[in-house]
Length: 526
Image (cartoon, rainbow, N blue to C red; front, top):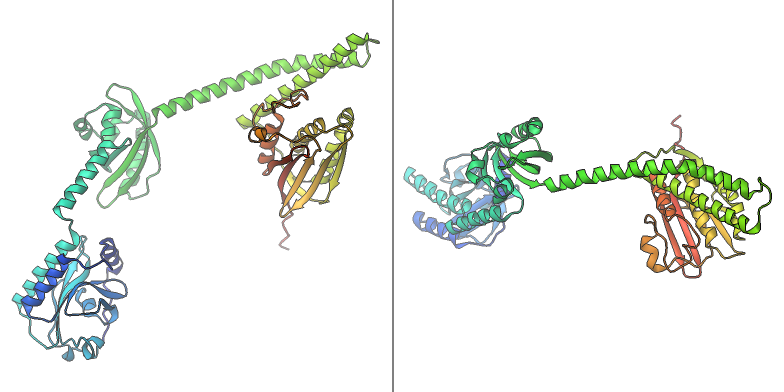
């Protein structure tokens, strides 16, 4: 036995076969009537519509045979698809390719075979219409022509939709093009439109006839024409088309920003595209950028103009409060102290606003270094000792991961700890303590600031890290603060590759947790 060799176009042939979506489908009368007609016409006991995949021949229709498939390696049809003409074996016992084939020596005891290839729409030979007999016989030229005619009938059934199905599909496509909000089109890779959705007419104001007679490049703004031409040329070369944004002229002379998603079939020179009118989106983006720029300039100017005189005022009030001008009357001293504290609060607010503006504009510089966190915690705790004494609260530092390092900006990291510690101290009851801890959690380092205060109201959890957020219905507003500290802290931590969250319980305190990836030196390859 000689197994059938693979056709030269096997990869393409299999793809064409699978695209038919016929394999392993239920029996259909339109194919069954063909094999019945073939069996009667040629007076053979077995007639088959056979499709060959990579390992078997599967029978879409059969008469006179119980099996639904056989191995491709022993198939007659595997040989038949190698040629465009009818393949005939008058006597299998006399043919070196088949005399010891299991289908010849055993059931169904094939002696005679005639098969004509069945082609997919691209011309690939995907199977056969074949005749089998248990006795040898001749097969005339007239017989060959009749079998070829029947095979053409199989191809019609295999490859074509019914007329009604075709009409339905066409009507659905036209309806889809008509109703789609997006601007659907089928065009040549030269930019000429072949089919257009109604959205093109609604958006640009032209009739469909005018658009079909106008190239896309003629509609495009002069400044965008070169990019559009290069985009179309990519399609001509069969390359994937990236997203494209350009301006197209409307009938009234206005310009519309269009955003494209498209795919191209280079063999046909056809582009299938979806364009979307993003003119309003572009306008809003431009307005937003303008507003952001104005806000940025306003905040920067006002903040800088205020900070210089406020710094002088704070300095003067500090000197007066310290007695540089001599003892002050009791009432005047209290007023000076209040003014001094308010000036400090205003300066903190201005500094926070400037930091926020720098972060939003991407102008805040970071100098990330692999620093040991333990000493930074100690430095932060020592810097807040005086502040802690105002509230009769102590700060304890616990370093459970000595020597641990992370990539941080020292000044920004200390700014985060200052925000968290000042909040914890303000909301701690007199005589309590605030714990500043460094520990290892898996591959990350956790720096936590824990107070024993009243906790954070549940209704405020979702807004805690928002700008200018302060909890209503508590004493938070009486404690002072800008409402920006936590928003800035989270942004700073995230810029250093970490995260900031919290856990809290009513009357059991709050713990803010900063987590950062632990830095470890790369081992030397020497």
